[in-house]
Image: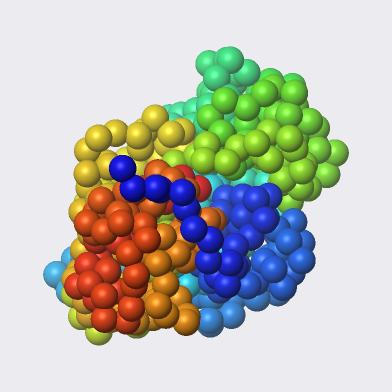
Length: 487
């Protein structure tokens, strides 16, 4: 039996354990550029603070927007008319939306902003499927992005009254004589206080408060407020009451939504969602309550809550506790392979093809069909079929076979440590540091040896098979390892 004691190639830097955890959870995959960035910042916590500051000033910079799909900048009326005229379907534009999301996640250096945007696009979910809401879906995503590191009450007030949300949950056609309860119910159940914290009468009154917010369906899709359709009369939702005498209920809506955002039940639900996303599926109630109190003490600001989370013992002990979802897997694979996606000129280019890769693994970004948003618990993605689909994507990308256009993969010689020769065990440690962000172990080394049919002490030169025609096997082993599946 060969000796699988791992070698060490310390010339390839890795982050300290806690910094690596911060960078991994709040990015879409560590790579040499991110490692250097975190080290230059002075560690993971300082890098996080730099990311927050940069997002406040650079979120609209061209180099982080990757705005390569012009249809996403067309207004709702134009998008709808182009569908009516069979120029291009709105659903096809939504493919572009998923592509833009994934490209930003691959290449943007505002990684914390992109991660938090995804989290809240899921919490205040509007599916990117469906003709009506899709006409406004791209601007809705940008709205969430603009608030993702701000205050939740600002985000909630803007999101619930956005035409994409009004269309998705049938508020766009709600009237004072027949208030539609769909948005009101999801507002209470999913977006704020949660099941058990409201009654059916609360839903009815919330629906009445929201009447007046409308969209011109199937024509221009322009949003407007109709005072003639706002229900007036006293309303009560939980401990929120209002005489509601003004036919213009926009100020009432804003008061109501901000009240909900400041409810202790909402604070607990936001805190728990952050804890599940960034720590693990089962987080102690003590930490959740501490985070919720921080949320309330800071006027619903999100970043102070994240600071509590990052400094918690539960976070420090949560290594390998969270699985990547399908899109995160694809994006992380691009990042750790250091592949450079280019502006697309055809459907076969990587920037366009990566959405099909995510679909093959299990889910296109923002395509979850229900209002609750795609799952963030491990159980949804810990299946054999998902693992097999991921392995196939890893294999073709390790070989640079698909997509092969509109993307630059590293050449085999780029993966070699210097100077050569080295032992195979040293090569594996070097690659584990690049792809996993940490040194190899016995498990990684043994899998690599068996995949490439070599022993740990085999000498590797520039012309060795493991750096030429067997390199795809070696990279695929590292991509298929549990370390790559976890955030």
